[in-house]
Length: 186
Image (tube, rainbow, N blue to C red; front, side, top):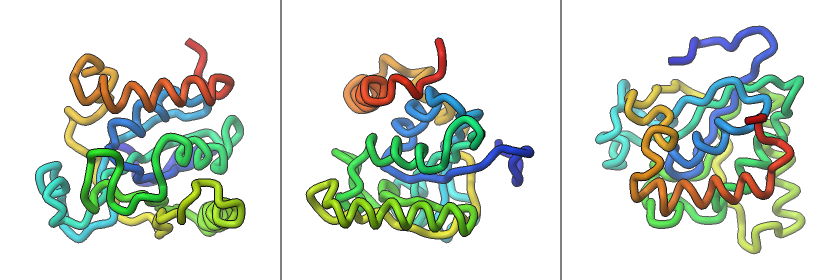
């Protein structure tokens, strides 16, 4: 579990873009990212678990909390990767994953993050970047609940599982091709 406050010089981004396994696999490979934890936020159940979140009754989204060194990667770059690896135009849905827990959302941790995210969303709208309106929610970061241990490093530990092969691996391959220069050295 991540501490409540980041270490000196480290920032936190909390992002929802479908299944957290996909997001975690990508951000784990991004240069400047120091840690990624899958979890839940944005709901009303005090201590949600995976079953409650998947039911849609808790109001939470599956998210990743990304800790990063802003001297090595900017918040905007984090957001650019985020928007490249999920469809921000489909409300409460990413591929076959359907429900409010799979919504697209940016949970900002500071006024600066809010302003940067709002500016980027405005750029997308003006340029009609995605060919459809972006439905990504922009909201203050609330209570973050780390997901159960078996969800952490899921792709790394379960790469041969069918969901990982057919959903996570293609997103990771797309990221690796498009953002090769931003990947951590092997």
